[in-house]
Length: 408
Image (tube, rainbow, N blue to C red; front, side, top):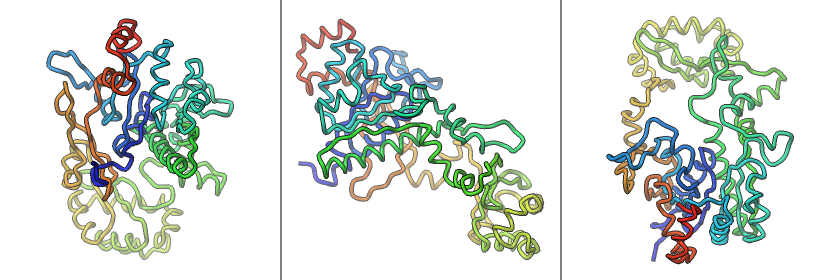
């Protein structure tokens, strides 16, 4: 019998993941990391689009299996079942899985699953305790609800690109699909809240997650800066709108970031740089004054920093607890002793690809730690065992479904 120490926080929760690309799969992977049993439903032969989003790929020696690294970033710990639910027999199989599920995650367009009888009202009638999470570009209401939504487009529409990039340069997206990832995190939080609500009331519910909503919500202080003043913030490159100095600077040989968050830190920086005249200047003595006189101050700090090497500054500023750091490449990130000590790079066993590298979940739970069961699954790897063991599909019916292309 499993003890609490052997179980993940979400052990026993059954999730049916109908999503693809990134936001939905990220939510599903989070739930799997926390111990839920996640079945990923994919199209036969093709699977999740991101299986082909490469190079780079992970390959078997004979190239019989080739899966993009992108796919492996968001699907570890899941089982894969290949079902064509555009066919009635495929729909019937999904409905049987729904009867046993606690959660469904989907990211089809508004009402996209209704024609297959896989929309929330249909599934809630079948399983009233079901938690059904819909992830779309614009949500289930509003004039844009029927539009498709993509991370890049939402970063632009939701304001992020208006504050990202150099002041005189072109608008710039973030270097990863951040809106998708944030939506996945919000979705997994919402699902767990709904599970707690169901625990108290016995009631399931529909979760309406929209990429645009998430992007606007996560504009954080920039959104509040606008709401407080009526003036839209612009692009500041690596600078901070509310804190100075808080940006990247060139030293004599390389760049570093200086992240001074209070007046005491600024005074200590000036002492190290032997430029105490700056902290004594009324224009720069407080953060408010430094923000107001940013244009005058930054060139003076640039001149001070160029006098020494990056490593000199990193060592000397660390001694007096002034926040600073290098700008690392990913190679340097995974060689960093702190990253190594925290075990953020790991590898997981895959039945055909061998050891597949992965990035650890950052959540650290003392009583129900994250347990990594396997790398992302091969397409349809678990179709047979799930249908036969969970749905009592006979061997004869299984072969019939396979011959018809209903399953893969």
